[in-house]
Length: 245
Length: 247
Ligand SMILES: Nc1ncnc2c1ncn2[C@@H]1O[C@H](COP(=O)(O)OP(=O)(O)OP(=O)(O)O)[C@@H](O)[C@H]1O
Ligand SMILES: [Mg+2]
View 1 (cartoon, each protein chain N blue to C red):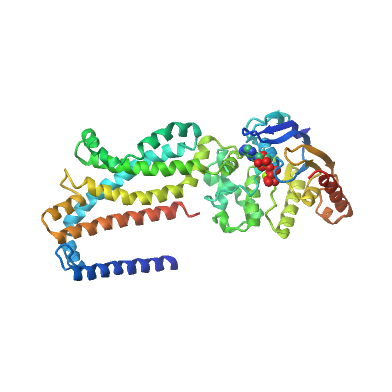
View 2 (view 1 turned 60 degrees about the horizontal axis):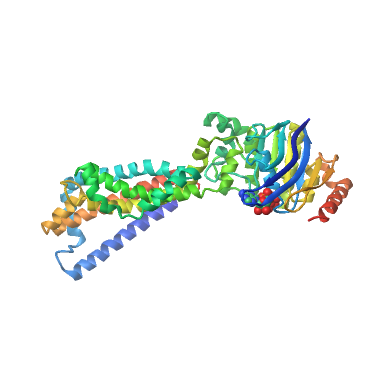
């Protein structure tokens, strides 16, 4: 418990330092393009209702994409523990992973239209590949010692996945997920910057086009909060699932 | 009747490494057998074959007269370095064998509680293996093996990474267990003293590829006092001599 108390403090200190640096920068730059934090905070609070709605829409898109990506990448990645499956999956992975998937946007819009679905597909695809690469590596490198240990108990193949391959790979999957959250939010911004009238990306772009810098920063703060809450949620999941690490 | 039997067992790994050559021996019901050999001579390979994890490339391995084709339900294996799962708690590790045999997780945990307390692991049910000392981890491994009520215990250097004191304690524990339950034991070791204390039959293997150098009968083994008897030291000398000639 003392650890979490300490952690809370360190977060507060880091937050205060960031605000202070921002304030000092704003003071010296003295440009409407960098308003000081208290003005942004004021605007954030006064527009809270509007921001919250956009934030929820963004959160929905990004969480949905991540869950979709996970539900596909984890089973495929884990099954690469089987050499015969990996021989089949690996060439696809090596050919498709290095493509900057964001350039497939036109195709995605063609397939899924310009609604939420295309945004979810774009974010989901990028996260999918990141998770898949890591999960596959983790599953292939599971120590056969543990597999033997389980098989000696009379385990079936299903047991091996449940009791060894999945738990052994989980820490690496969660680390990949943490990295993917950052990517997912960046892609979210990109996906929301056109052909939509909702989401934090839209809010930021609108504010920018109207040169309303204060609202622009309010939107950025909201986006940062979204990312931060995802990290916190992820950390809670990790604590729950990987207590043994 | 021979419960565990090797007939001209040979093993060549796919990469061409020959681990075992023409190994033959047999262990009667309720007897104990120690297999002793230098590092890398194929001891683990031999146990893996008896656990149904590897198929021999020559000869055959039998349990109760039947060729082993899958992990035998009657046998429990204790791996070198314990074989515990770091992501499972003590009680989850111990209950796993029963769970895999079809018992519900909750029932399995209740079933193994008495075994845990018998092994002095009470209060550590929810610890993870890395939070335990080596000796405790070893006891968890024993508990896991005993949970499935095996007739045959296959052990791969179960005490090699323990300090002298815990080792002796656990050796005594194993000996008493063996006397009480009349298990058939196959114990791999590279310690001459351990082989003589625990094995009523001692199979000496040569360096890789492991061949049987000699089979030494050791009928006095089977009591805790044996460790301090003149016959014990005499037997150790005898084993050391046949070992020294080849290692
Ligand atoms: N999967 C494998 N593929 C190829 N060679 C192997 C494999 N496993 C073991 N070997 C080789 O077979 C030989 C016997 O290995 P094994 O692990 O059975 O020895 P060991 O007697 O248990 O050794 P130690 O006392 O160090 O535990 C060694 O030379 C080892 O390198
Ligand atoms: Mg070994």
